[in-house]
Amino acid sequence: MTDSSALDPEDRKIVTLARSARARNGVPEGAAVRDETGRTYVAGTVTLDSLRLSALRTAVAMAVASGAKSLEAAAVVSDSDAVSDEDRAAVRDLGGAGTPVLLAGPDGTVRATVTAG
Image (spheres, rainbow, N blue to C red):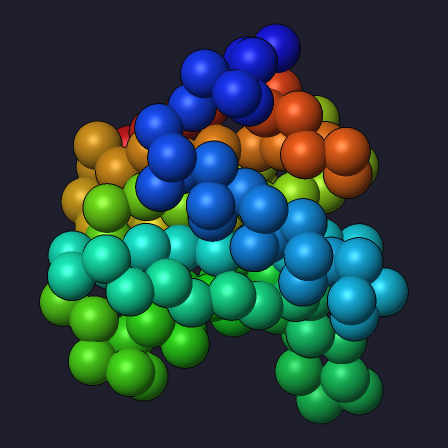
């Protein structure tokens, strides 16, 4: 476990935004990404009959659609114990292999930090 209070303030912010998206929308996951200019993009899980996207892939898609050229960091709030390979691949495609991905539980406690690589 990582002490969330020890996180960089900008990383703490994206964890908080991801947690808020999850709670506000009543979805299994919330996610937030920060682009190279410091802008953040927040999303929840998308579950439609014709479209299913994790929260993190949705946040990455929102960043791309808004003109982001790279990512500095990503965060996902979930009950899951790991960030899926597909989610890490989406972050890697935009941010590169070294982009940190923070995984936090529903209480906002960061359980792991992995790279997109």
